[in-house]
Image (tube, rainbow, N blue to C red; front, side, top):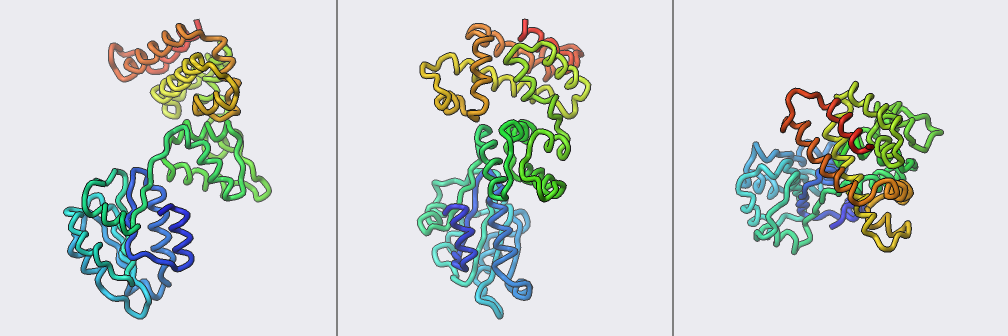
Amino acid sequence: MTYNQIIKDLENKNFKPIYFLHGEEPYYIDKITNYIVNNVLSESEKSFNQTIFYGRDTNVPTIINAAKRFPMMSSNQVVVVKEAQYLDKLEDLIYYVEKPLKSTLLVIAYKHKKVDKRRKLFNTLKKKDFTYESTKLYDNKIPGWITNYLKERNYDITPKASLLLTEYLGSDLSKITGELEKIFITLSPDIRKIDLETIEENIGISKDFNNFELTNALSVKDILKANRIVKYFAANPKNNPTTLTISSLQSFFSKILAYHSLKNRSSALIASELKIHPFFVNEYKIASDKYGSQKIIEIISLLREYDLKTKGWGNVGISPGILLKELIFKILH
């Protein structure tokens, strides 16, 4: 089952007796679970026909007993097991899975970890088409996901703003959508495009002093701009953790090194091979002219060294801000 297929079937009242929702990305698992909880039954039906369990506080026999009940004054009942990854003897559900009650919608929300796909329970669920896997997105896929998410709500976003959100919010889709929802509330109805100014005003991420602008300054060896950004980072360490900056620089220079190895340097191929938005291809082209392969190898070695220093290895009381200033000086000279 796919997410869109599940939601469409639910909207059409085409219910399955079991929804085994599993995977490392909780966002879509929560979306499906919440849709079922909020929409399958009317408010009057929920009192007698909707039961919610938590994996830490229940057991499989209790869940099976609830699932085997017939609905009262309703065509269906809903039984939800949240945090099912904490449920003991999950495999015992096989006794119900083999012969589920058609009037019950049993939702098993197994989040934040992978299920053992070798077990009989999972294979039986999969054979009956009762499973949905929510896989975690790689970081390079997040800007595109943000763009599509906004497009579905009739909003647009600039590539820089999408990348900046990814830099600071990571790959947690629930966190990203939470911040975007805050923006929707504050924006006037006539504004349908989100840019760097929108991000700065509504989320508090500086449009001028951020990791993206730092890599941009380094790509053209703009010493003044790079030092201004690093000075700002040192003065605002809570909002600009040095470990995150070093991680961003590691990704940036690793991609420049990969660029040097490309034989075909068409923009489309560069974007595909480096896993970047086409908008940023020119930045990598310019940076490759400023930094030869040998220099990049030295920089990557420096990044590893300073990453360890910021975590306390070989560092006697030097602040992360000072370490970052040293690092940027060595990259640029």
